[in-house]
Length: 145
Image 1 (tube, rainbow, N blue to C red):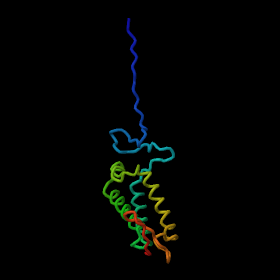
Image 2 (cartoon, helix red, strand yellow):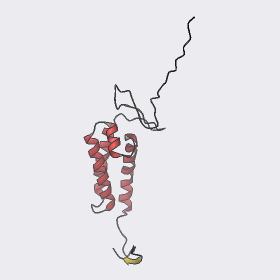
Image 3 (cartoon, rainbow, N blue to C red):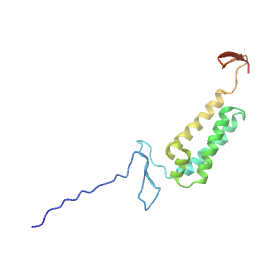
Image 4 (tube, rainbow, N blue to C red):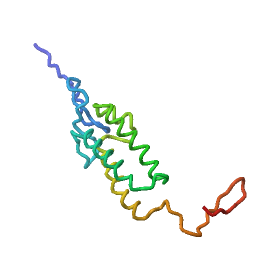
């Protein structure tokens, strides 16, 4: 008499909590972001390069000595260089460390939408007669910029 054998098959899901990539035969081909409502962007690198170049162009309307412009130029130049130096999306994500490339696209779009508002409101201009209070070694002082 033949004994019956049952076999337990372990199935590994493609979708993990973080981004999911296809099998080892096609490395770094993302099949899911693992985030609800955020679809995979196959041209993410090219989109990011375009957004970063556009950001660097639009930030030129902000005065060069404004802290906002300096910070935006610094991190945008870094991210642009990372995208130009790497064709692998995972390498871009690892170098920038701000999420997946699809999230980076959203962040870059948000920054682009903020620039015109900052230009309109000019937060780098201190109004005439405005004083700034500062504290040094527990002594409060005032200065006019």
